[in-house]
Amino acid sequence: VFPAYDQIVTQLAKMHARALGKVKLPVVVRIPYGGGIGAVEHHSESPEALFAHVAGLKVVSPSNASDAYWMMQQAVQSDDPVIFFEPKRRYWDKGEVDTESIPGPLHKAVTAREGGDLTLVAYGPMVKVCLEAAAAAQEEGKSIEVLDLRSMAPIDFDAIQRSAEKTGRVVVVHEAPVFYGSGAEIAARITERCFYHLEAPVLRVGGYSVPYPPARLEDEYLPGLDRVLDAVDRSLAF
Image (cartoon, rainbow, N blue to C red; front, top):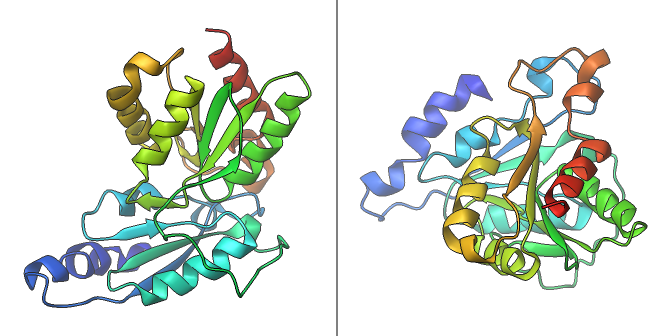
């Protein structure tokens, strides 16, 4: 996508403001992203934060088959440019899609699993990892809530705040490097909004601040079940 980054950021994102809101821009840019597929670096990176930082763009990523179906319909119907990040490792996932149901708003987070001890916040490919971590933690008597953001721009901070105030502990998980990642913005907002409700610092789990490694090393690079559970244990230890 980077050969088109200039046009997306300097033109597409700004046309609406330049036209004083008089021009609609119903454009969807589909970007496959993320690792776990044994590909080389340019095919496995997670550049969502580079786009979410740009005012004028909407940025979303589904975590399951049903959301992929409905969120694409909603993105196409939007009058704003939508960057639709498609997690590559989820292309092979199967799931039921109720084509008769009424989907929730495109940019609203959903609670993928209820819990009371700690909140895992994720989007795209990491939601499934967080659900697996929550199931594993339950076997040890820990009640973990999983919040699927679905949208990185805008972010549903109200949903995050409700969950953070409920559990008092939050871990943010994404594939992209932790350094300057979307988790940093989420952690900062939680601290600003929920400081007196927190029982522990907001922790982040993500990729390392290095170029994406060769396929034989990506399991060491990508956040997995063990790293998420380690963060859960560290947060609950406070």
